Length: 197
Image (cartoon, rainbow, N blue to C red; front, side):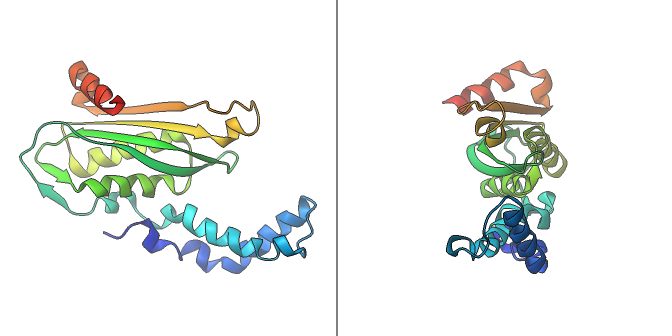
């Protein structure tokens, strides 16, 4: 299945001239001279950046998991330290961090790179970290029907670090637990121990 990068020139690309116009207008409204050399190409650069950072709107995250495989493996599978970048829907400020995904299959597995693609599809849009965490867990649960899924997301939010309370280095950690992980403390503990190692 194609990844987010294959969809970049779609929604924003269709509206390229309008996006560039509005970026130019914002620059004027904050007091900038849009005719100065350093800003001449800024609207086009911002538009290209938006194509990339908002590419997730063009992807159904469920489709990203693509082909799954029958496999008689019923032990914990973890992909950890998946780096993500997203944009806070409240301030349109970046936030970024790592996602850790663990699941116990019940006959079907996904290709490991598909989990990273799922993270990219969910995070490359205006988001909040709590929703990212739940969406990844829910999509894994829906598509793979595993015995259990656990997702932990760590994030550093520039809307909190670079403005407002200005607490750089602060991290937010969210988790979502589905299936057997809810009732099996040993499985939860194994997952949490393995993502820390």
